[in-house]
Length: 304
Length: 326
Image (cartoon, rainbow over all chains, first blue to last red; front, side, top):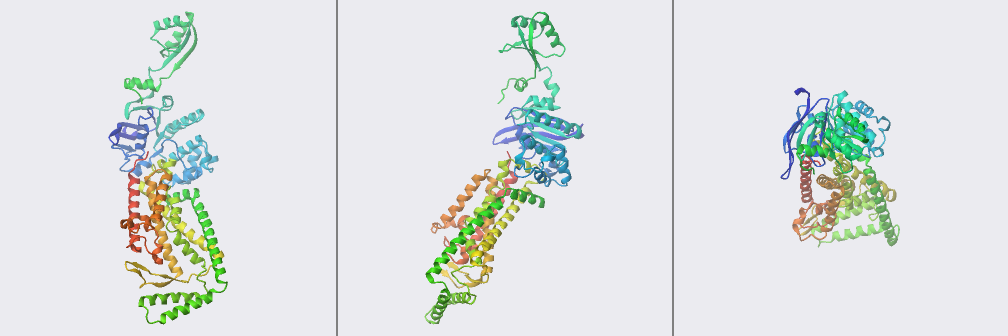
């Protein structure tokens, strides 16, 4: 198991002035896994990611990429790493190709062949000689990924990769990230403040709040028993009585009733409602919301 | 390293800054050429067209007469002899001293642009070399490559030095070509007086000598290049320290302009001579103009500028390699 660890973070801390922004993070990334970094805005995601890629110097703690310490062996470590921090800010006045050429020149042994490969991989071959300022946001994002992949990295770090993309773009990006992890064996670290996104994309998740990791777990474990079902029924009183005899219910202000989700029991409850003459107009399976997850995990601690 | 410099050059050329600078220099040179041409014309009208040879001959006779007088101080005598040689040269080579050729125009242009115009052009490039990467956000991509930070900065600095050399070469070539089309391209060998020394007792002319214009120009170019490198390095430092290109430019511009103003009024504030901006007019020392503050001379100014340069290089590299990038 140890062999497969590609990114190892130990007790990473950052102080700005006297304030501790990041309070000792420890986690590992394994080969071929998509790791989610989940937290609300201001939780310290971006600061952490910038420490992982060497833009910010940690106050203490270590980051190792494929065994190389990022402070002591910067060049070796960065050779194994590809990243996009926030938006991929490429040079708008250069063509896509020249942008890739620019970054390829900064990595030893990367030539035109590799530039062509990554261009094809992200599907930009037709527009690669156009200026980047004529690109759509989705194309820029793809060019950003292309530059991150230039050096054939083992670890890919993406900060909010779906930010600003339309739904089709988000799906495309998701499929692409899964492909990189499963077929190319990359470790991908993805940060997001959207639980739904992490849920669809990641194998494991670290939840971070106020600069500390609250929990690291697989997505299934994290979400188990937290899904809810919303019912819209009439007459309301009768249905409520019936449902409350079957399970615990919670009435919402908009007239819906929330119950737990259970794959076997939910259809059964529905049948009983219908048989009792209650008409069911809506059954809606609800994903847990990030806020609720936080409230539960932090025990009522507020999110800033 | 070569590849990094190639990168920086590619960005610089894509931004089209150098072309803009070439156009600005071209336009200005044309303006000055026209102004000079007008001046020459009015002078001609005053004196009559072909009179200058007679006037020069008359001057030579005058000087010779004064030289033969026995009551003259040795020092004064020597200077007169030198100017006699100069006048004789003009006559022998059929050069009208009032009408400059392209090389003379080039010299005047360089001397007048050393403290404001050329530093301004250099600033256009230097002040956003680093800060533009910040405002664009591309600094994050640039610094997450397997290349050490000091190498990234050094490649930018070398690119800056190359660009400065190019700007000065452009200024030289453009001023020669454009003014030459009006005044003619001759006059490289014309003699020019240099070696004045301003001391506490006044102008010391003991070391005055005649120098061919091309030699003099070579020295001028060297000094202009040095001043531009110093100003470029200072703007480069500001570009590292201040993220906003506009703010960095503003600070540098204020410094340069305050230098131009201070030169006229600091003669009694002696410590002001350690400010870089009052030391920029290096070419004035060659002509023997009195320095803004007593006790300043060519080597002093070069030393002051050198210290500022070294400090700017140190600060730039120290901050750039240490700073957290947000």
